[in-house]
Each structure stands twice: as C-alpha cells, then as structure tokens.
Length: 194
Image (cartoon, rainbow, N blue to C red; front, side, top):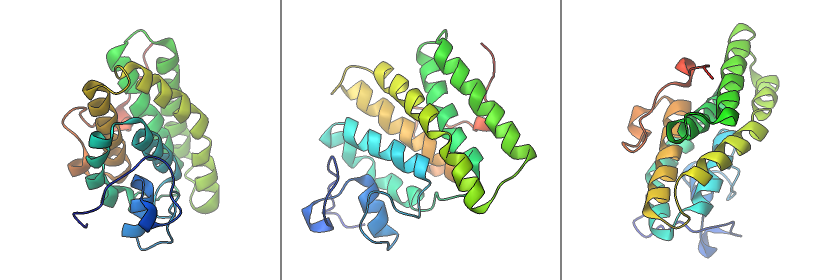
C-alpha cells in the first residue's frame, strides 16, 4: 500500500478525489473504483462504511491495515453476515449487560447460525439469505456506536476501530486482523442467555 494513501469520509468519484476504506479495498482488489466491491462481504462493507464515516480523521487512518482482510471477505455463507450481528450485540452487552435488545439480537444471530448450519446455502440463495441480517446489523451497530463513548472521543474511536477489526477477523478467520482493544471470539460460541 502506498504511504501517501489517506482515508476520508464519504464517497468519492475517483481515486484522485480521495477514498474511503471500502473504495481503497476496491483498488487493492483490482476492481472498479466503488465503495461496494464484489470482493467484500456486503454486510462487512456496510459496517466498514459506517465506521469509516464515524471515526476521527486520525483514527480513520488506523483502518487502512484492515483493507487486505476486507478485500478477501466475500462469501456466500449467510452465517458470516449473522456473525457481524453477534459481534455488535456482544459489544453492546459488554458495556450494558442488561440490554434486552442486544440480547435479543444475539439470540437471533445464534438461531440464524444454527438454521444455516442445518440447511447450508451457497451461491445466490446464500448471498440473499445473508442480506436478511442487514436490518439487525444496523440496529446492533447503532446501539454499539451509541455506547462507544462521546462523539469525537478517543474512546469512541478506539472502540469502533476495534469493532471493525474483530468483525473482519470473525468473517475472514484471520486472527491477525483482530485488535487488542476488543478481543475476537467466534460468533459460534455466542451466549444466548438473557
């Protein structure tokens, strides 16, 4: 990766006008310039876009090392998308153990994982089944972001960067992508208590 690459908020028309994390991923993967590269799991791309746009300029640059993992995250296994719901729900429960909504989302993710383990889907049906996780992912992520700390704070930046690192590690199985701020754990062992 070039040393002069600087990640920015939002979308861009071309690499010369700047790039967000997912646009950089498209360049790394050799795909057309877009914030929705085919090489990335759609749910992980959405999470990366949200985090890219919510952290400070300084923290955004720490996302760049995650680009190679994001560039290899595409899968048609719907369990991967539900894994991201579980990662975000566990982040909420770590800060607020009695959060009923996060516990419900974690149970839904666990049930989805179980369902798609019993009835494995591949190809287009698997990708479509994975997209069904997006509404729950949005709720879980926004809940986690709201508890991450005050907007613009170093605490919030660190928490959100670590959240994306954990999400990338869970989806790709790459322990190196995980951040020490939030320890990676497989979503398969998610507790369904509460």
